Length: 109
Image 1 (tube, one colour):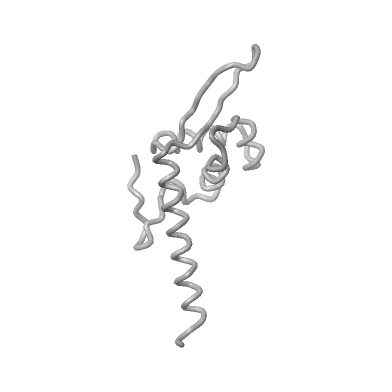
Image 2: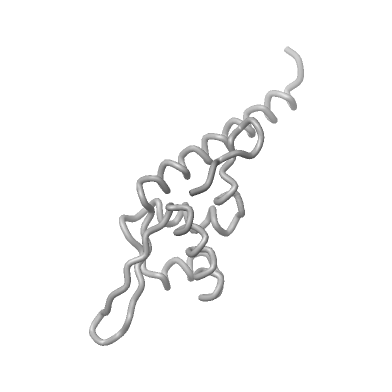
């Protein structure tokens, strides 16, 4: 498991990479998604999805389920409760960073 520690805003080091964040965000909108749907949405190769999913699975953020549709093998991906919490925390940290930047740009009072 990974400790979300990247500065005072606690960005999650595992999911701060844009493609990992894209995969996590996509999975957050579903109970489960087929590997190909994730690949197509993120516009990345099968190898990239596999590498990203391995890292997210190692962190405890993604579940992988394998099975068949007819005789064709399929892989389904889903966020774990820990993954959903990590994504929510990461998004909150991004909001805090954006708000700090907005306040700094607005200047004093």
